[in-house]
Every structure is written in C-alpha cells, then in structure tokens.
Length: 116
Image 1: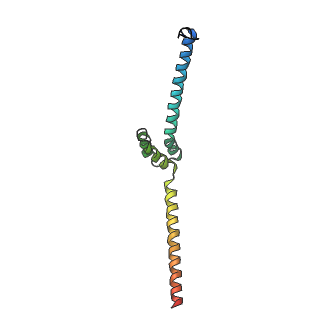
Image 2: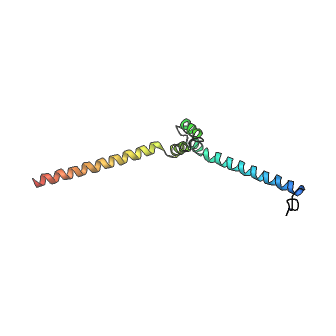
Image 3: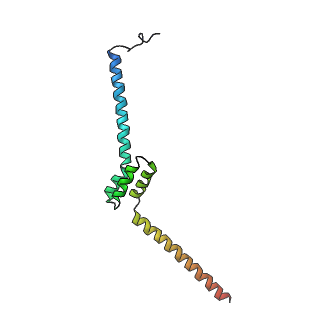
C-alpha cells in the first residue's frame, strides 16, 4: 500500500486536518503553560489577599521557584502559614510543658518530704 493511496493524503482534507492538529497542539501547550503559571503564582495571590507582611520575599521566592522548584514550596509555606499564630501556639505548647514539669517536680518534692 503506497502513501498516495492512503485516504486524506495530498488533498484539501489533509491540509485541513494538519491545521486542526497544529491548532490543538498549540492550544494544549498554551493551556498547560497558563495553568502552570496560575499554580505557580498561587502563593503570591494568597499573600496579597491576606496582606502578608512578607510579600516581597514571597514574590522573590516564586520567581526563583521557576528555576529551583523546592524554593517555590518554601514560598507556599510562608504564604499559607500565619507565622504569628504559629509562634503563639508554639509558645503556648512550651509553657504547657514547663507547667507540667514544674508540677511533677513539686509532687516529687512533696513525696520526698512525706517520706522523710
């Protein structure tokens, strides 16, 4: 079977199908690029919506993230985690453990006094 006897080869339908294929290919590449860009800019949009204090840092990290993708992950963490609330929670956990330790030490000293 020769190439000439194939259907849609060498005619107007062949050219039209090639145009459609190239259009679909370019559209798909453009959609993937646009989707990648929108996902990549997600930390920056979140920082703007929260009026984050580190917008400049997040912006720089998203741009650097095009080259080193792990940097983009840091930008996402900074943008989505409220640093002040996280530090307050860590402080509260730290104080709880100090209070528990002080309470258990007081119980041990009371037991020692009662034993003596």
